[in-house]
Image (cartoon, rainbow, N blue to C red):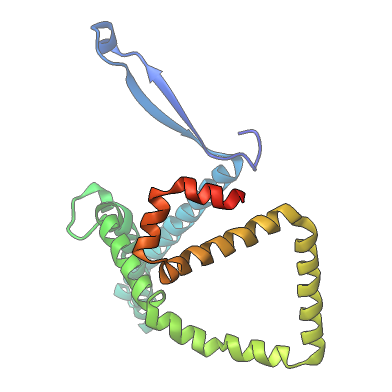
Length: 230
């Protein structure tokens, strides 16, 4: 806790237990330290929990008092107050159960269809991935989005303006001049020579000499050498 910008650190401590003295493996316990910002968020969550619990207890007290007043003949208003307080209590308990059931078993009881996220996180991840892939990243959806955007038509309309066309031409020419300035003559010659060689090799099978001439060249290398020297 050296500042609000400090990240969460994982501190692993090794503690020797009674089993270590008997030659057992040391037990490892991972302790998590939080930054000041994380602790402030936790304090905020605790305050909200206490506020919600206080409101629930307040509504319960109002319900009890309203029922007592209604039974004492206080008037019809007591029944309305009791009904409103009862609805508040039911809603609060239902919300608490629904939120708690997503992450753990309420009150530690293994109630069916609770602790949904820890027990079904892999299935939820697969379902979410399939949903995103089918509804946002499929080929047909992407094509429709691109056609709806109309990139080609917008680019053509933008380039139809002479000022925009002149600007693009100037930028491209400057980039080309910069590229030509960076390139060396030897590099350009190597690239051109390689392209010519590949082209010649591709055309060589079409204009290969007769079989007798190829055989004569292979069998008479001295003749070729003497002819070239003369």
